[in-house]
Length: 215
Length: 278
Image 1 (cartoon, rainbow over the protein chains, first blue to last red):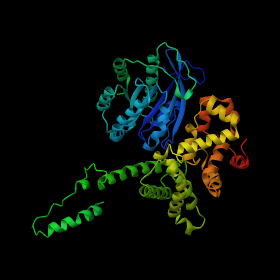
Image 2: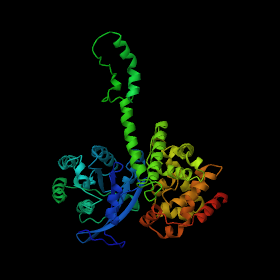
Image 3: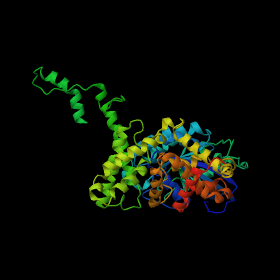
Image 4: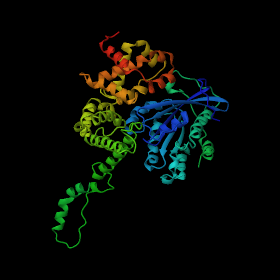
């Protein structure tokens, strides 16, 4: 499904944001997805970093514009500008640090206050390789995601488990929401796509995503 | 912590002991001093806040220049250097409760500490931690407003500093400014936020950053104006690629600035100083 094509042609351009507490692994998730790289010593993200990757869904080329944001409180006021126009979000926590899971509620709240209420959201429990010191159970995270009408998956950027699936899952979902409608590419490329109304039957899709999830 | 609690409750205990009861007395703990107290003034609340900041500092100190043996690895040198960074950042956070620790301060501190610690005179190098602390406080006294969220929208905050950079580019290269901000809609905040907050420490290799800092810190007018001119020169040096680029390629270029001849960059920046509005 996720065939990579480097050229600049695409049928759809979707903006997706990566949010969550500092140190949960957002930057490594993105570098794993965009370049298949992982670094043990990733510097803290200051402001925002940006990467793109094009994937194939149902014969269409979907270009994902992914914005990796700083996790620390101080940077939230600044990063809120980056939410503009996003149609998907990965809300990331570190499954070995419980407080980062608890804070996802605040991240979701902030996300929803800046974006279309129908934005496709996936809750991502990262660092699944640290399963021996897990502090959040799959059931608990799943229940929380269901309550928040979000998808849920667990990933390991280190072991490259489920990372591509998490991103392509969100992108495929956005694509299905957009359906056959041709997305007008607005004149502000940092705020794409403008005015797109998304209506999702969350229930069915979520079940499908959970089935496809890792755990 | 325990001592502080003892001091504050000490007089109560004395009073009770003089009551002459044979049992060990339970000391009265004021509501604010209870470990589960949610009061903002509670010493425990302070303790938990400090712990959170220290954990954040620890995480970031460990990922400061992971490519350099001086800062990272299992050697005793790297370990003692990390300890020094940690001390400085914790003390700074305690002394500046309005700002505390903001991610990225480790990157601003690292070059200062590196220079002092590598002083050829061992007697000077021995005081690297104290010297670096002093200079870090001095440097941030001019830049700390960029780290302060409350000032983001004020005339001294980061947004206004970024707006100054935008004005500077508009003044010196109107065509490039128009293409970047109007045509390709690259908001300068997307790249200049890091350039300015971290004083260009992330955009070049370490040696090149030190080279730039020599210029920034030797300007009698203070570093900020020079910093903005260097940022502006960085844009001008890649103007041909920027003018040919779209939103995506321009943002990628500016977020991963190519290595460049620093002397030339500083030369171009310095020329902006003399140039009048064009």
